[in-house]
Length: 176
Image (cartoon, rainbow, N blue to C red; front, side):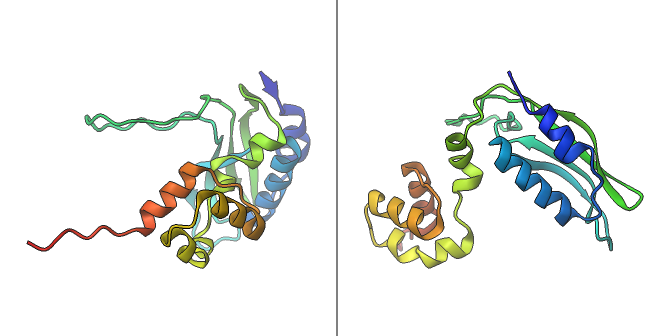
């Protein structure tokens, strides 16, 4: 198990944040420093406030996914390690504060793993729109990977490219 608890206590847990933006900036710096990736898995909005949220739940991006209640069979290509690292943020008076945290990771924490996570590889809607012609017109995967890396700084996989192409391609059923 790899622990980032000391860094988390010093950089995040010991502080009070006056806005969500301030929390996000501190968390981004912490994640870059420790080669971790946390994503919001639950939240409760706070209306008309600079804090924006009453409650936030951050979990490692390797945290186990919610299981589908569907009875259908599905092929699941899961790459998660079921890491249980997570922390909870609550609004208290005018501050966002961390109320509890579990900072033990069960997977390696290094720059290449953190940089190649799904969250970091994902192209934004604007980036997809900008490169739409390349995806639709059959540009090779190698050229698309090189383009995405040079233009957006994102390292796509063949599977990422396949997913984007399938979203962009519309299948029309033949007229009967």
